Length: 393
Image (tube, rainbow, N blue to C red):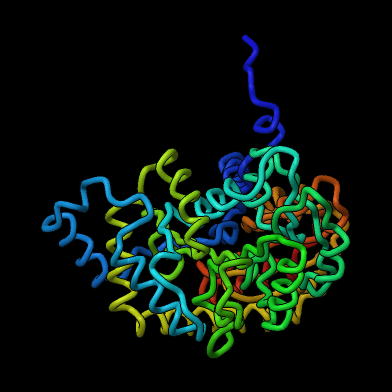
């Protein structure tokens, strides 16, 4: 029987993290070595005890936890997130500019559905977050690759050269996945100005903003009283409060666009999970000190990664921040083949740069992403030791 598939879906690559898990299932780990899994950027520990207790209470005591809720999210959660964004960024964000989604991936999908369709294009810096490219391809929207060079920072002038009559948006991720770099405030402002001049949306994915190394607001985009005419901000509660399995994200944009986002959300899932929304609200209200500790730990691991890679002969760290170190290797083997071999030869599961770049792009074959958020200082030292002695034949 011939399986009939929509062409855009059939052309979309397999999910990279699932592909890496298939390598793991097929591999035999080296004797005496435990797996160092630096493939997926997600907490593996459960939420802190106080949050779990609040979630248990919600399940037992709040009947609304088990029912449909408003499509755009719990009003209390929308209002709390708006208030905290207002305080952090120095501008004004209102409840009516916030929607709660089933994770940040759904936030991106919903926003793209309001902006672009088959034949349109969206600019993505390379290396890109693969799920962004995948959703565009499934939707019949072309991803216009904007190479970021060794700095991993996109250039507004290079982006301007990619814009045509069918360009609908520019997508930026800061702190970056997969590169780890934090985009300077003036660079983000330059992209905002470009998008505004050309009538485009600037989508800023800030999934990892809670782990930015800079003090204060990382940018001033939301201080502009007309920010929502151009800027669309995306966020995830998953990393901050270890709620990956509960799927809670958010969109901040113009109310008129939210009316269109509501159509998408109602059709796909009706509402974000009620327990996850209540957990996110409790986290916003009660876990600021705990989250500061989580940030400090991630920044310590970032420093450990930077120090560890300084001593590696065959690896160059191009970017490091949030959950990620992004490195170039000089091992003479394409990254996709190298990543698969590393599982059985040194017990390291990482994602190759080929998963973050257009098919056939030269840079993808020389680069690798290491998600270090789930390995401590000892794990980072072990990773460096294995890479130091690794010489694939």
